[in-house]
Image 1 (cartoon, rainbow, N blue to C red):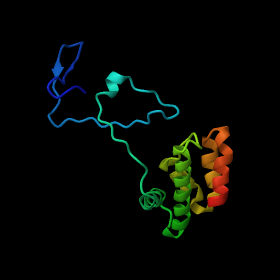
Image 2: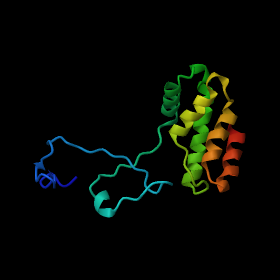
Image 3: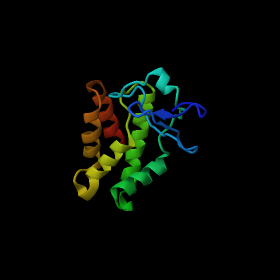
Length: 149
């Protein structure tokens, strides 16, 4: 994790030094400031190049959800509506109106709930999203679900 000219790993028990391959790389992900995560100390965090990622474009996220769930393309409009709802909730998060962001993983779970008509979209969204937000945020999420789905 050090600079190219100083990076090596010495195993204390044997004294063996291991030099990484010239093409060796480490890729890591983090959710800084996200509930349930730990902050990295400055010295460790300084060893990484930071790339801030945004959410997928709506069409790509819709396709991903359909692909991961195996939902028929006949359900595309429902998934598009779900992705649009998530977009609005994400805006609310950025604006400070909502304390928990909506993830693609949650959208996939909602779509799994509507498979084989186990639940309708509105009930599935409420089941997944309302349960994951703070009590303060429940009313806002329920309102968006009622208006947008």
